[in-house]
Length: 362
Image (spheres, helix red, strand yellow):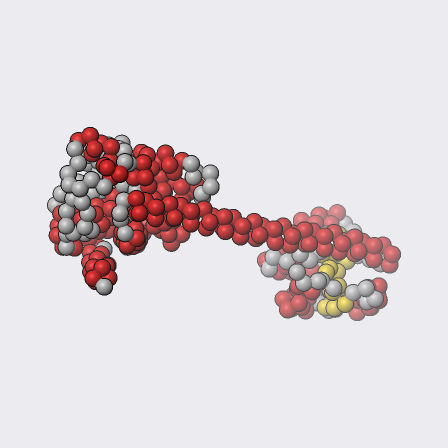
């Protein structure tokens, strides 16, 4: 914070300026303005240096009220105390001056010890106030930075947990990366064509990070079911489907260490990424817009990613075959919004799959 060491005297009568200057020149730098416009120009260029403004109300070119109006518009009133110097001791003038934001009023003729004491009191008060505000701002920034670091650490922990799920299910890191990339692409189009979702970059980033935990519940599924090759029995299928609710139970233990919005996205995606638009999904049999737009998008991404990835149930589909299967409803009914964003994402999905396939051959 810059130290304020200047008293600005705005007074059109030269002898009055000289009297005031003599009072303060040993303690402060003194700047003079013979009219309101000169005072405004000085404040514009050197406002950060001014500890106090001694302001006459009646001046040529611009009045004292004009100066105060400028300071109010420039946001200077809280930083620079204004002491009015006037020969008009009417209650009306006093009321107007204080309503404008004057800190004090000194009446002419000047009594030196009174003027000096009142200026000192006002300057000390504002200096202390400005110092405290600067400290509060500094502490606020420190707290914000600490909160940011804590948030990043917590999310790194959750991301690492997402990687553990990949190892447990024999899924590659590329699977998690592609889920994130596919989700980001579709959210980009959702933000562009569906402003009602109020999606900005911050929320898109949060949703994309949350997808890393969509299958965290698989940590609670026995290996003999999770890694079983071929079609599951009805009992095993029910057990496998429970990974959505198991995942939410796991996430609840993280509810106090994560940003609430991020946690909400994680929970919603984990629980509802197997719901379907027609109510045929699980675990809650949600239908239509009972399913959040986030879960609508991630459910389609998850279905697409499973189709184009080799697993225990099938060899990988080509991009075009996977697209056709989803559009034909072979993977369940998805929302019109999700299908719209999926079609808009077609070329980008294809490039991403082809690039991943090339990497797997290296």
